[in-house]
Image (cartoon, rainbow, N blue to C red; front, side, top):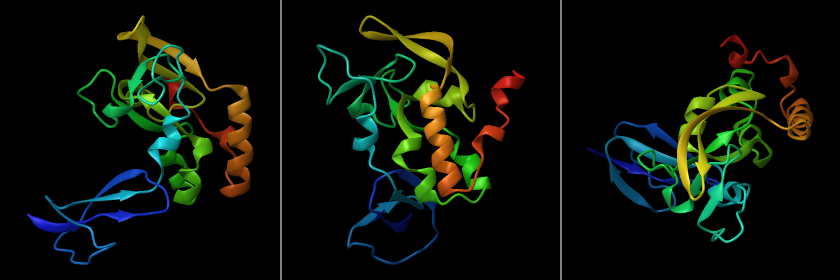
Length: 180
């Protein structure tokens, strides 16, 4: 076991890094872990607000993702829960990273949304068409395969943003989904 530290950026996205015997106190917060450090780069609360509010349910705790699956705010990152959720990059972050787009631009709120964890796992690098694994039936989640497409309005907004901030033409992206 080694000493590790938390570093907080201006926003709060969770990213895990491994470090070995690194000793430096950042913000004076020391944690003991197994060679792991948590770096936050976007605000999950801001991403949560992008989920669909459902009338009659506490919007601070319950929302739905773009596929209609329920998410519980308290289950963020919990892949053992059918209501667990993650932050999804609408246009794949890894593709942007391969094109040298700055992390702050990849993680801009325009490219983020909350997504039930199984849906995010199935989606992977697919854009603008993607598959999902979970939707809802009443007030519970059920396994059901569906296909979705990012709205034309969102596609246009992302195209303009990444052309300006990353000099990337996302319309030339070859969707792996099309080869399925």
